[in-house]
Length: 124
Image (cartoon, rainbow, N blue to C red; front, side, top):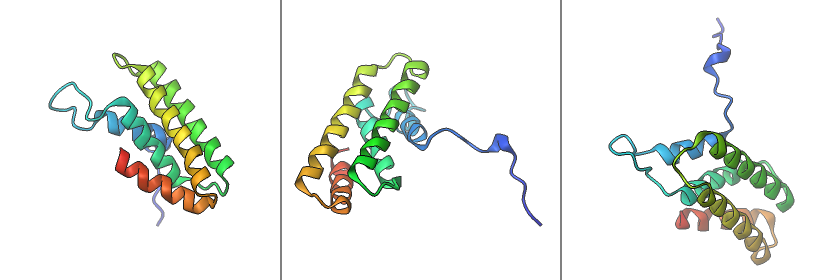
């Protein structure tokens, strides 16, 4: 017997937005402050993109990260009130520049990817 999954049970929200919402709302049950600063939440969400990435080149990874950054900015502009969108944009830009710089340190794509994940976890 097969289980039928209703379409309404499936969350089609991109993973990067799910991550961002989780990071911004975690811990806010007790007070109205987010558990994490907006730029740090953006960086952690982008680290999730790197972890889930299927890219095989630096250019492919950068394209995925830029797309995820754009999705977060669009989401913030329409759904996040009382928070600075400049902080979100700054966190995204900082991470994108960091990824580019990390590739200069380690030209091997997989080594660079691991370096970004390790340093990103320590930073955020």
